[in-house]
Amino acid sequence: MSTPRDHGGGIDAAAAQYGGAPAEWLDLSTGINPVSYPIGPLSEESWTRLPDKDAQNRLIDAARRFWSVPDGVGILAAPGASALIARMPQVLGDTKRVHVAKPTYNEWEAAFAQAGGTMSTGVEGAAVVIHVHPNNPDGKLAPPPGKYEGTIRVYDESFADCAGPGLSHVPVTPDPRVLVVKSFGKFWGLAGLRLGFLIGDETYLQRMADAFGPWPVSGPALEIGARALSDVDWSERARARLARESARLDTLMRPHCGSPQGTTLFRLYDVEDAAALHDRLARAQIWTRVFPYNPRWIRLGLPGREEDWARLQNALGSN
Image (cartoon, rainbow, N blue to C red; front, side):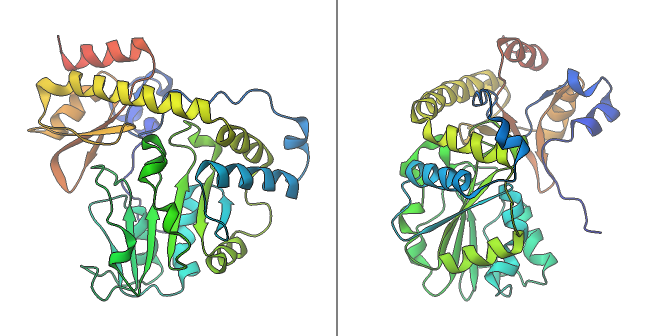
């Protein structure tokens, strides 16, 4: 059995430690859009039939348009970005000399380490270079892929969609050694749907498809994903709202921290004692994210409702 990794979420464990029912907690630990895409009614067929080719094609066509995927570059839908990450070592084949730019989302290094990979301390001589772009937890952007000739470059763009298409490395995916991972659940606020995408060379996509087997994505996920990716107006409104609300969170946190980092879906703050602030908020049944490798970092996602904002403000003691 693998060692549990450090993640956000885990409200049931938080409630067991600090008290209260899980439903009473405000979870700010995950960086998921608190105002989710309104999925609307679903067809009966999405529930009662095995997912068919037409439904898959509608989703892939919508994804190609939304991310402006170049002609000739493949797209594979999968049951979440985490599932793609876990299978990436067997898909890439070369798990030796892997460089994961850190600090970052720890599932990348864990996936390659579990497959027997050798972690490289730098990009020079690495066979595989992995960047989370923008990075989780600090929001830093990855360099362009042309810098690392002769390597496979993988970009995890799970949080890129909140910033718009100009941030993405999808335009360089005609290079067969560049792969882009997309998460659907973060920006659209539907993490429980478990939908993700791999964009890149068909050779790698076919290996990934073989690893998943038939029907990797459920009928409801195919239908909801196609609908949401086609709704450009919603995505533009969501980006504008996230920008406003992340600035609002920075203002609320200003008395407690230094300069913020992150994306508009989550904010990373440098404070004198992150564990103490995390504990203080947990006693008010507000769950945040701290990091074992940096005692000064605390990460907060966005509250959704006005009562959630007021609850956080009261717990912080802000004016």
